[in-house]
Image (cartoon, helix red, strand yellow):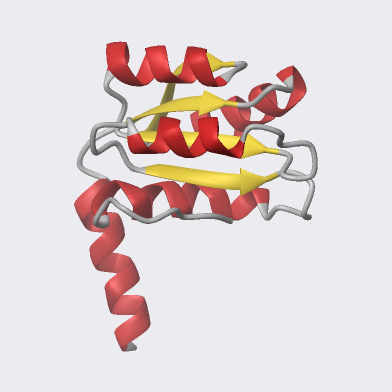
Length: 128
């Protein structure tokens, strides 16, 4: 077994012992639905809330205390980058994954990015 695959196995072993609670946030209903279907099909993940705006996402983070926040944004149409960064800063240690849906996002990589975010140190943006 290579070092890389051993690390991958260790990561999955640590996370697989529980179900990760996830808040999904996107302005687009179709994007939120796609994310929910993708993540709810994972045995170790459950979408506990959806938000269509930053205020809704903030309320779910504060009220539901998810393990990870998955944000799907269109950076070409993002007009309030400060509000997005503010949400991430106010997440009280909640890991997050940011996916740019307009830059040919790798949707299939999102579950692994979320697993990584759940066990990694918080404090830097993660994207896929």
